Picture 1: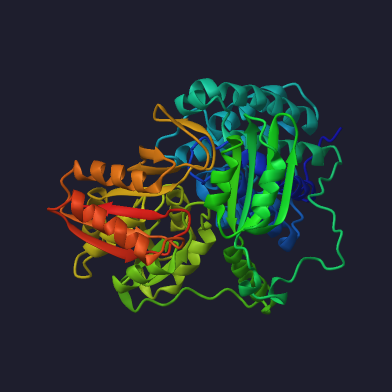
Picture 2: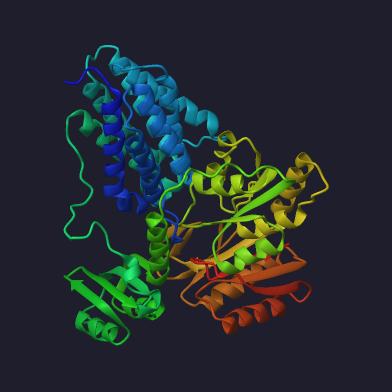
Length: 546
């Protein structure tokens, strides 16, 4: 039994926790109850945790203070999404508790966990129960109680894990959304995987993420061009069999429109993998066999381009971090968005820097901070343009000498409206108020596909259907995108908008977008209609109404 927590041991615990969440990130992702393809809680927590582990490896801490500070600093800068930010806050609170400590015993470890929870609750404006906050709070409380009579670290952490599991099971009762979906909280589940990994480190067990089976340490994505990928979409799904239709017919159908085909079936399900340029047709054909249990579609060309760029950056010799740009003007603006069209719109509005990201690809605090510090301005306004990025943006504030003002924009159209409202001749406080008010006056509809079966807003949604969300509320869902578009625009019209803008995504043709514009002109004759190329992933159309 281990009685003393050293810096080296804490670093091992962080590394093991990072490995544990990496192994289980997809399981955590799948707990997401929202029907749109944004199940990225596990990914965000894994990327955040791995950044903390990497910082510990880089600094090679000796004392407990050094190890906790390295982990907390790495997690803070690597924090992605709300779940990642809360995770970083839990470790930041632990680091504060371990200040000027060479080592720690069971009671001090438990107290540090409680300090982490306190830090997280203070930072979250409206803490919601039935989340990672609840699970971590009850786990740390059990650790503190156990430490009063336990003499070793393993017993304390084991008790925390047991209490956390009980709390996690109860999240379904505390959160109405989880209760309706019949699932536990994804962030809480991810936290317990991390805690379990840390416990295993105390027991001397090292978690291996993957075994290297190839000669190369990793694939060289630049060995072939993105254009060499003939079929762009990796499409995977599981269908629950509802008839006797022969799966061989599905194999035959897929062979005509794709490659890398794997179709595995039994009496209950058909599991399929295919690379194709026609994922919609694949899903339509699959529905003739039964209902979807799971669906996943990934753009391999986009993934390959990102990998090539990442590896090119890795091969450049590392240089010292650039110093923040010296102020040359009063104000600057950073905007988060995805899609070259969206980025150009923000640039045309005078935005200084773009952070690529959004739904399913939340940028880290470090990503945002780099752009903030690159702008030669005293005050920098940040437009997160996604509710899951606001907290990560706010974490930049204590990390720079610049004044960072985060405008809580939840969508790209809100960000555009805020950028339009900015006035370089007004003071920072006035700009913050007017930009926030401008963003709040915008209604946003987003049209995408359902990644999973779901009960949402009292409506049954099937995986593969098109759906639209209007200000976060389900507006329409149907197998026909034209029906979804028309219903959505009709609901937008109920607010008597004066200006409606349709931003079309990377998978939408100009002709299809023009047809949507015509529908808007037909249904909203008194509104000014604009159709612009956004080039955004995930959402076929993003519609702004003011």
